Length: 334
Image (cartoon, rainbow, N blue to C red; front, side, top):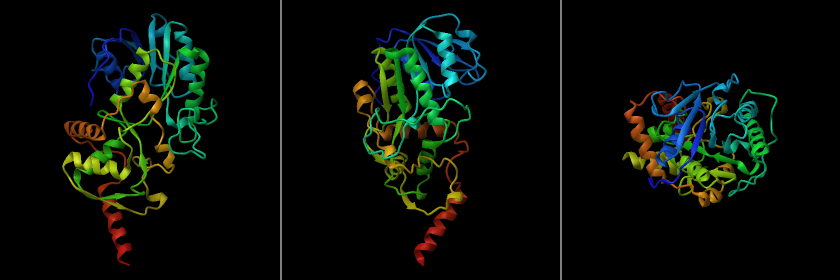
């Protein structure tokens, strides 16, 4: 990927959230760019990382923000605000002791009814939800909408909203992109429970971090899609790219799967294809890099192998895949 870093990011940055994946990438990029970074979190993840940084210990679930009662920062990056209470209490604790508040949101905020390819950041959002902290497919996006609204209401032109697509890269705990990287590296026939032509959008975690740094350095307000890869791709194309990087060959076999047979949160399957064709134009103009998919796949493959290929939680098991492929062959033989 492009390692060009803006070394003029002479600012103090407070990061609210863990340092396991997205937060880790943001902190690493900010440090390379010369920022002075303070971490706020429970102190449970990434405790061996960034030993020279100040860590303020608190807990957003319990509303413990006492560690933020002192200090001033040029910007805050909120990677762990999921419900309005999280954001409201953080803003109450910080007040005007921060310059810009950058909130990491989600594409789940959007209403996909009638969505068309190329939708931008002005696409209608879902109605906000404030009466629950139980997050599921119906509440996650609306709670993020409420968080966005509260940040904008409090900070106005000092607010920035970043809405990532599916984030991929080393240290990803979700197994989503890692599943296809590892499966493609095995080669052979790959059971795919959807049309291989389904569009897919992922963004390299390092590209997302670079966009965040650029927006802070430029003191830029507004909302921005963080989507990739560099060139539009399909799920079938993504799998073939991962195989090419690993030096293997795959045959993608579309399989018919009953809803009850499909494992939950199957990696990168999306029924609403236009939701995987959002426009990156505004973010690109603001500095979002475009790392080639091949680079992201190669880096994830190297990371996954270096950590010893632990069991993954997503996708078909080898036994499930063999049975689905055999069943598909029997259908075709009739």
